[in-house]
Length: 181
Ligand code: S3P
Image 1 (cartoon, rainbow, N blue to C red):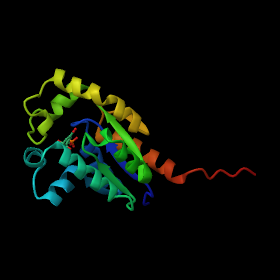
Image 2: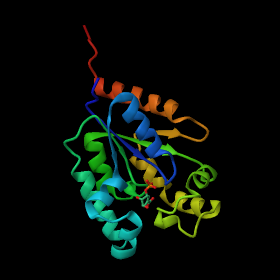
Image 3: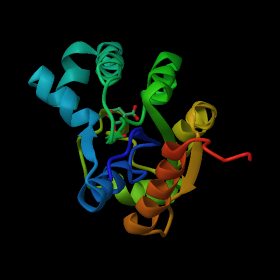
């Protein structure tokens, strides 16, 4: 079955967006789009290089442009960069074509998941719980406001989370078709 809507996975770096997206792709045949990878491909530079050479604002503009270009897609799971919900125009673009799912994780869980990677410029030199907690707190209001649904990921497997999201997507696809007679 092909989903009519898209799924946008939002959440802090290391919340498990890519892992859950990969699960939905391989178990439910959804198209899978990794925003960071797509931006890297389009720009011919890594995210770290884009931040270093062009600055964060330029990167945020690329995110917005990419989201706007997805409006005619369906049956796609989009793994969003952690900063995507910070711009309200991005949230509007996501809601036009899909449901927005916030994958929440505790700072300790996030640290565990990001501690060995070096491809997130905002966390370089700040791999500690206090810093992650601070940045997460600053963003929580935006994540909350953007989310159609929130799922805590700590200690849960991608399969479990993926199935929960897919069931939700199918129920939204059906819409309201109750027979009132
Ligand atoms: C960012 C998250 C990263 C990437 C960039 C900025 C953020 O993506 O887009 O480093 O502002 O939270 P992931 O959430 O996929 O790590």
